[in-house]
Image: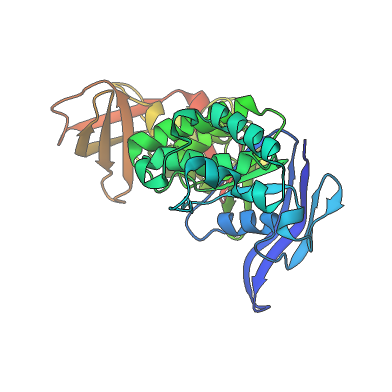
Length: 361
């Protein structure tokens, strides 16, 4: 089991262009950590720095207490699965999976045992004698994963391994990776993706990267229910959290956040006299909104509706400020386009942000 620690890690190019800075992270043995963030935030670069494929220009990376900054990739006990399968087209599945072991001069019996065990875990046994061109995209990706498994590394790195698959194959292969982790509970895995569903379903913890650093680290539910800042609040969850401007006009257990045309009582966010008059953003997730005939967070006209079967998305545009808002209602709702509807939410599910930071944390 491998423990990774990153201390004040940074990456610069040419000594001037700073890509990552102040990366401090502890990855516990046996965890499946997922790096997420917008394009260009440095998540793949950070993964490649851990692998030894990119030089660490500042700070320190340790694996099981040993400094790895200048350690060659082959000596780090790490295996990496890339976006592209990178299989040898002229080799069978068995030959692809065994190639690295042959280079390492393992015995034929060791190679056969390792490949057979990996093929069993990944359900590749029927395909061992096939060439890659005879496999589906999902099967090829499993071969690429199997090629890593046979090396028996302590740490697995996945760099958006499902991005080249269609939607159905992504779901199937994601399930295979979840099963693989269950079958290898003592192996540490670090997974990069831009797909929230992959992050939320696979991760023991998620690392959200933004603005060249870490925006928040936590379990999937921690990030969803208790985002520490507006960026995480809007990045985690689909559709993104709605944000409405307001001002605190009360304190104590019944904080009132004044909005144009009304207000909303927020009972579970402690405030003090110092909070009086603060300008805030009210955050409420689309799935936490519901129609009301009483006090509302907002009242607006439905501009567009999207019926998805299990849910209906309502796109609002508020008058005056033109803020775009979304509600996600369960079931099918017809004939709402053009109507003016009042929406409310359970106060316990409302977030307040001041200067971009959560007041709930």
